[in-house]
Length: 104
Image (cartoon, rainbow, N blue to C red; front, side, top):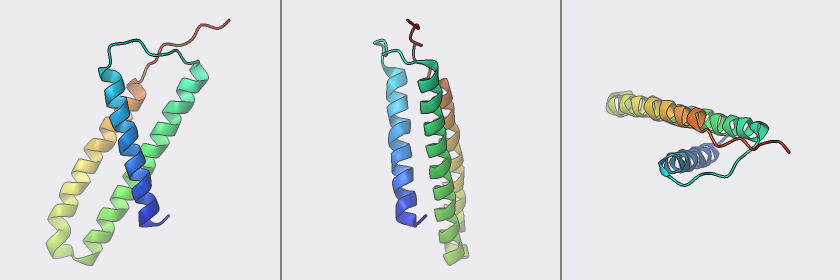
């Protein structure tokens, strides 16, 4: 995967994470989903978050390899921020709990 592709994955993941944060803040009821769809959507989100996190780490590592002395502090700080963002995005995806539709 190229850095451009990894960047696209990271952007998509950030958009999903922001959407999930907004979804939790809404007070109006959500449309119901069946249990299979809920599980599928959560799996897609978690896979995207994993891919974006890997892309972030790869990018930091490449920067670090180019100039260890100058960039090591920034890379370390970026690593910590990436880990926290990864944890928050996973938590948000796992907490997503839309109403389950009643079977007819």
